[in-house]
Image 1 (tube, rainbow, N blue to C red):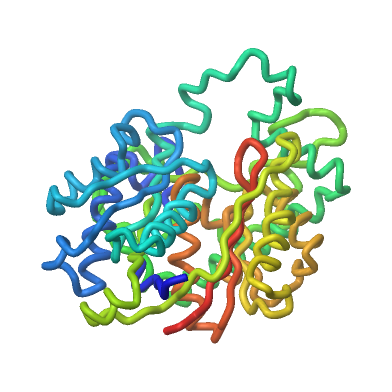
Image 2 (image 1 turned 30 degrees about the vertical axis):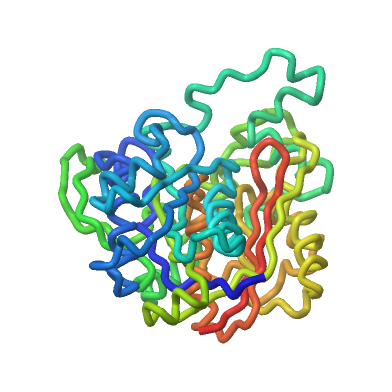
Length: 394
């Protein structure tokens, strides 16, 4: 395999989808265009955009302002040279990570690509989860048709593996505490591109301000406040999954710059991270959330590594039920560097963006914590999981 690196990264703040989203008046393509331009500026390539060989963006629910092949469309509205092609990949919750893997793979083939901008974007205010879906009427011939409801699958994981409501709420409390602490300490400052945005506030006024902080973090979240929340996906006595112990819906974009060793040397770029393993797996759609517990052992075996060699873990919290199960199953639930700055429950889960957002956060975390190896993983809708191993080379 060729020497291929991630050399720079940047993301927007993560807005909480809905009427009061910071980015309610910003299109998805315009949002990611801002990130793309900032990425090239941070890499010192603002005047050398023509050196890019491709743009690959992850996204899902590819309609409205996520449509028209947003990977290519964003090249055009970014003002990038029109000679740069672009494409869009959709592996649901891991689309952003898949985009990065596709970029690494393309460069590794040696068929002309040496530097690719990869990332992900999702605007769940403009395209709510499930909007426009037309599910196959024969699904129940293959599996329980309820698997299309992610919250239902989270309940199924909790019931099958005995994950209690208390465990789920505790993970949610920890997630918000970590994210709030990291925000107050300015640990996200370097990875977030401040964007001036106009949005509606809860008092009914419209304001214009610079958005540089994740919107969904709830300081002061406690077990007591979470215990008062009712389950939202099922309503029987066994129901445990609430809005409080589930990830949010969000609007965000994130991008990384992927380049070969030769291109880094030619342009004077400093490598920071290297992908040394990647895998995607399929699991029973009824228990979608167990994906990381299957994908992570597979990618570790692929890389010839064991879990005790991993210094830092980013396992996305789609739902606390599945994140609790996976991290317990992997023996890392109490690891000191498990989602050290929060995850999907607190920061949010902007589907097609999440994989790239996590990679961006890792680029800043690994150096800060002195981590040599890190794992990024997430469950993926409709019964999948994805995992990657990163090596710090900066």
